[in-house]
Length: 251
Ligand code: SAH
Image (cartoon, rainbow, N blue to C red; front, side, top):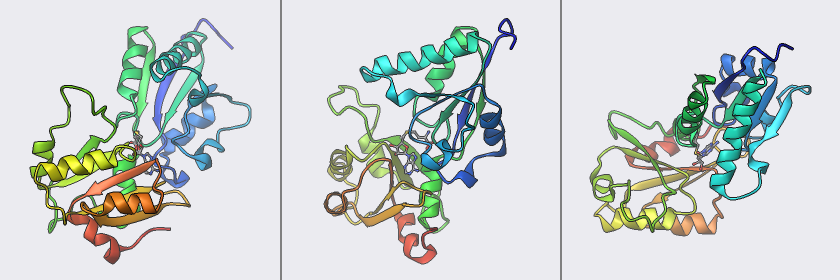
C-alpha cells in the first residue's frame, strides 16, 4: 500500500438499522474500506456485515469521559487517514442529524484531511414511518421540527425555546429523548401544550425488535415507565400519531 498518498474519511450514514435501508453508496464504501470506525447505533445487523478483513475500531469502547472519547475518535480518524487509509466513519441514521457528525467533519477539514459525507436515512423520519406515522400529513401537520431531548437542564441559556415549541402547530420529533422525557413533557405542558396531544415512542425503529408505545402528553411518562422504554428511541408529538392505528406497523 502506498502510505504517501493521503487517505480520506467518508462520514457514512448507516440508516436507522434495517440493512435494506443502507444506501448503495454506503454499502460499497463499507465493503471497500481499510478501516471502519463505528459506534453501536447502526445496530447489530449492519455492524456484522462489515467484511472480515477490515480493521474495525469500536468508537464506543474508548475509555474516559464523553468529551475525551470524542477527541479520541477524532484522533483515530486523523491518524488513520494520515496513514493513507480509506476510512469509513459509520454513524447511525444520517451523519449530520445530531450525533456530532458536523463536528467530526470540521476537525478533519482543519487537519487538511479530505472528507466526504454520505447521507443516510435518519431515524427521525424512518422510525415513525415504520410505526405507521408520517411526519407530515395534510390533515395534521404541514411543519415538522427535530429537537434534541438530551439538553442539560441545568444549562442557563437553553437552546430549546419551550414556549415556541409548545405553540408550534407541526410535528415535534425528539431524538435522544428517553432519559429526559419527564422534563421535556413537563416543559411542554407548563408552556401550554394541550395535555391530550398524541405522543408515540418508537424504540429500535426499523430493527426486528422495534416497539411502539402510543399515548398522550399527560400519560406518556407513566406509559414509558411501565413499559421500560429504553434508548435508542424516537419521541414523536402531534396529530400525525393518530395515524399509527390506521396505517399500522411494519414488522
Ligand atoms: N444521526 C442519527 C441520530 C443520532 S442521535 C440519525 O439520523 O438517526 C442518537 C439518537 O437517534 C438516539 O438517542 C435516538 O433518539 C435516535 N435513533 C437512532 N437510531 C434509532 C432507531 N433505530 N430507533 C429509534 N431511535 C433511533
